[in-house]
Image 1: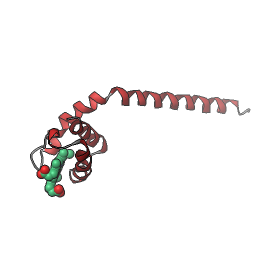
Image 2: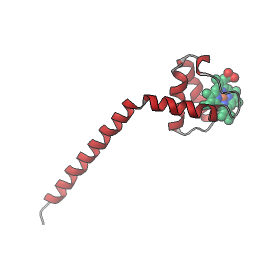
Image 3: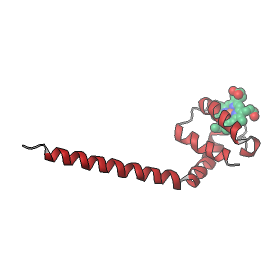
Length: 92
Ligand code: HEC
């Protein structure tokens, strides 16, 4: 038995990983709008639970960075939902 088939397998796996990585990058680039839309949907659901859902225009983008760190913990937000809401609030 030669080691060749294994080497090919490694090459193919590497190619698959590279393809997967570039597909994920393309998603990131094209999906700013999708992230915003998801944030707009999630924001009243999550952020209106304990107090009035504060509108994005109420704070600066930098303030939202800090607030989201705090509210994300309080609201126990999963990371992807938190970044969607964050993108939505920041864009006002
Ligand atoms: C589990 C309840 C809870 C959830 C969910 C929650 N908050 Fe809060 N929030 C609080 C409490 C309590 C305070 C005030 C005390 C503090 O700062 O811990 C507060 C304070 C704030 C403040 C600053 C003080 C003010 O009244 O203006 C902002 C802004 C805010 N929250 C935004 C958000 C956003 C955005 C979300 C959604 C990601 C969110 N909150 C989700 C409980 C919550």
